[in-house]
Amino acid sequence: MEENGDTNDDINYRIRIGWQKWQNASGVLCDKKIPIGLKGNVYLMVARPALLYGAECWAIKKTQVQRLMVAEMRMIRWMCGYSRFNRIRNVVIGERVGVSSIEDKMRESRSRWFGHVMRRGTNELVRRCETITMTKHRRGRGLPKNSWREVIRCDLKCMRLTKDMAQDRSVWRSRIKIADHR
Image 1: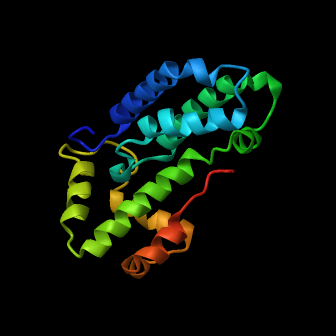
Image 2: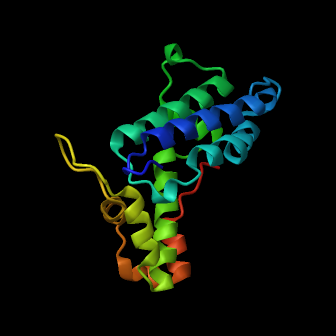
């Protein structure tokens, strides 16, 4: 991540690495003889971790999430042999392959990290994530950058969770878990 808190370069790098990992496994992912479900499992083990590495501390914007989603769907469509001209919705393809939304998985990983931080009982880890996303330069025009804390607040609201729930690890894990379509 850049010193000024901008995650664009980090996301570009993660997308590039994700495509490299996808290309390394393309012998399996593009083989028409292999079932789509198995291809989905290989994708989840090879390319997605490369895309999401370090996402726990990203103070990410909607446009950046969209770029990750586009990259992931291009990989999945390619391994299924579909193009945009087939006019099959992304949700349908994701269900066929057995892959949940990358946005939901990022929310899960941030929430898992947040739960760990809250159970630890110190604000050191929160401060560390926040200092990564702080700007050192004067801000230009437009809205201020999202802080990690603001992204977490939106995630908790979306998942109908409170900070206090994080103290019970088993309940927290069961509430934040996003299952892939199996």
